[in-house]
Image (cartoon, rainbow, N blue to C red; front, side):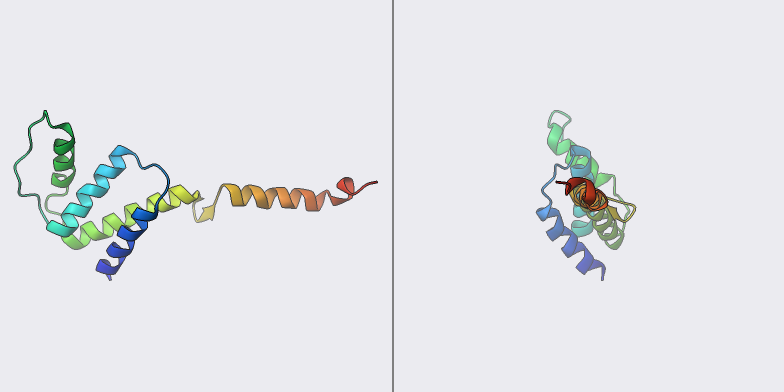
Length: 117
């Protein structure tokens, strides 16, 4: 089941349209590498190569985490990003749909005022 969740999360991550912060990208990268390759066995790149060093640190931060646990964490993080993108807070969607719903109720409740001739 974890492998399926992981693959679905990978596909869902590609579909996200909103911006993902650098810290979140690195966290996801580290979890992905741990889930697919296990513990980081390569030496640290030089500090002058900032991007490679950040990726190495993100992967190394998961040292000792099992592949299955990394898959679960990866899927949970992607789910969190999906909720953030779609504006879901505590299981309730926020944003345009909620605003449209509120506006329609406003007009419904005040229909006599708006239909006066």
